Length: 364
Image 1 (cartoon, helix red, strand yellow):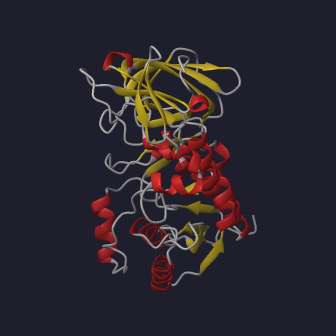
Image 2 (cartoon, rainbow, N blue to C red):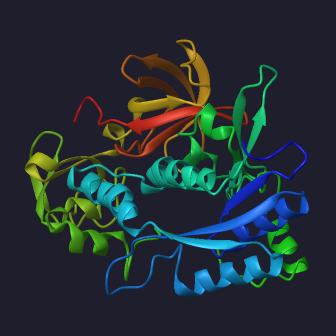
Image 3 (cartoon, rainbow, N blue to C red):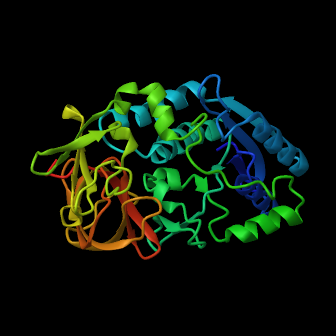
C-alpha cells in the first residue's frame, strides 16, 4: 500500500443520500479514518423517474452530507453496467419462469466487485456501506459475516456471496446499531437526511410495480395462458406468469370447492400449475451457484438454519454440499413458498455460512 502505518486508513463510503450511508460516513470519520464519499448513478427506465438509489435529490443530499463532514465526494456513472448486470438479469429470470433476486446480484457483481475495485483505485484501504450486518474475525483469523444486531433491519441475507478476500476490504459500521439509533445519530449530527424515509422496492422500477415494468420490458411474460391442476386438467386462464408467485391463493380468478394455490410455473407451455395446500409444501430443496464465506464447503449433514427469502423466518435444516457448487437441504418443516430463482441463505446462529440460488423442484 502507498500508506505508511502512521497515516490514517482511507475508507471509500458508498453513499446514496440516505440516512444509513450518511451516518456510516460520519461514524467512520469519528473513528479516525480518512473518508471519501462515492456515489453511483444507476440505470432507470428512460422517461420515467430516476433510479431511487440516485435521484438528483439524493445526489444533492449526499453532496450536502459530504460537505458538512468536509470529505471529498465523487459520482461515477454505472448506468450501462447496472442495466446489463442487474436489470437484464431480472428481466431474463422472469422470462424463464423463475423469480430472481436482483439485490443479491447487485451486491455480488456491482457493489462488492466493481465498486470495491473503484474504491481501491481511489487508493482506499476499505470500502464501507450502510448495510446492517457485521464482519468479525474468528480465532483462526478468518473473516465471518454476522447478522446485524437489529433483527428488523438485518441485511446479511443479501450479502451471502461475500468471500474472504472481499470481507478483508469491507467495513460495515452500522451492524452494531438499531435503526432508531442511526436516525438519532443523524439528527444529533444535524445531517440533513435524518428523516428521509427508507427506500422500499427495487431501485430501478419506474412508475408502477415490477409487473408493469415486466409488461413493458418482457411482454411475453404478461401473455395469458392456461391454469392447470397437477392432473393436467385445465381450470381457467391466467394473465401472465409474471403476475403470480409460488404459494399464492388469492387472485387466481377460478372458483373451486377447496382453495387452490400456485404450485409451480411451466414457461415452456406458459402454464400456471395449481393445487390444494397439501400439494404445495416441500421439505427439501436444491440450490446452485452455492458459495461459502469461508471458501470451503462444510461437512455433509451440517445442521443450519435456512432463509428462503429476504423476509422469511429461518427454518432448521440439514445441509449437504454437492459437487459443481450445488447443495441439497433437508428442511425440518415443509415450506409453502420455496421459489426457484430466490436465494437460500445458510446460517448458524448469528453467522452466515453461505448460500445459493434455489433450483426448480424435481417435480417441475
